[in-house]
Length: 227
Image 1 (cartoon, rainbow, N blue to C red):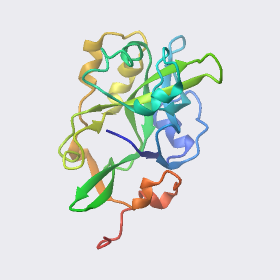
Image 2 (image 1 turned 45 degrees about the vertical axis):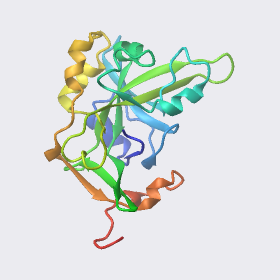
Image 3 (image 1 turned 135 degrees about the vertical axis):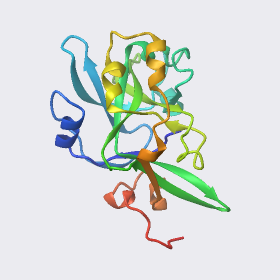
Image 4 (image 1 turned 90 degrees about the vertical axis):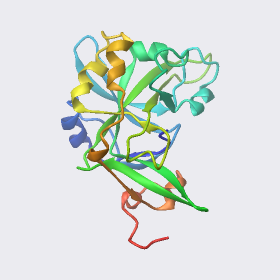
């Protein structure tokens, strides 16, 4: 599961790394929570260009009666998303990259719960495998929303959680974003645990638990010996 993450990189860095058509309008965030806006990348099927957009985190299927269903659909299991009613159409037609530079998981140590930040060893931004949907209710503003796909954990994440968000290598972006590819058997091999040896994890402040806290200090390791 992935329930909290960050994207502290600036727009210029993101545009260059993810080959975006234009720099995204993005303010660095250090504690992104469900129902909040995230930055996603989609591919324009007509011009084969990548665009960054803001979507609400928590997928709202087009057939949903109310947007509140998205609160329970922040993640989708990679093994079954292609066949589940809430995700199967998006899996075929509306795949995206969800940009991040780290995420958080909690480990229970006796009666104490310690939060950990997980990122790539080189500290660079990366992309979760995501699905997106467009929802229009009978009344109100249309909502574009998304979900993060999860898989079994690698060796680094296994002590922290029984699932981990799927991080796509850069070599997989083109296939994952290609709207002409709709066969699950071509896409499923991309949805595997990221190599543990290319990631790192360290304890961070419990302030991450409160989504009202959103400061750069949250992504810093706790000083040695901090309880």
